[in-house]
Image (cartoon, rainbow, N blue to C red; front, side, top):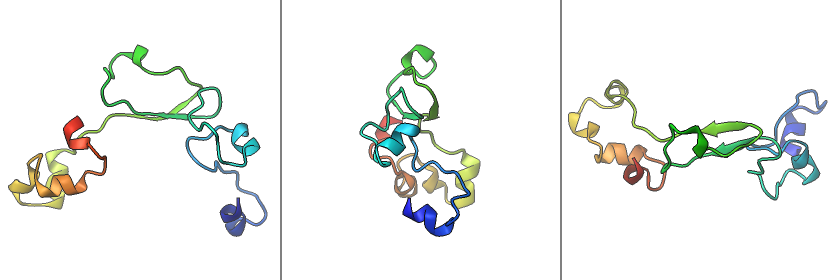
Length: 109
């Protein structure tokens, strides 16, 4: 990859071109995987905000799951580091909604 070659012209640093990666399949496909979530190669990211996350049967069987999780709000102590105004700590406040980067995150939580 050109960006890595520019900073490491000797090619001495191994790297994964993206995540998720299909490992050797990514190289064969010139680093543009036809299916980057292929459970047979490399790693998989899996997010399902509507399932019972306590039940392991709800997760796909893959070689390696490098990312998974559910969205949550930070603790009140964390909010207090950002704002001293209690009106900002409301779940639907402008501050909270501005910090939300997942499209329908407020509704899903």
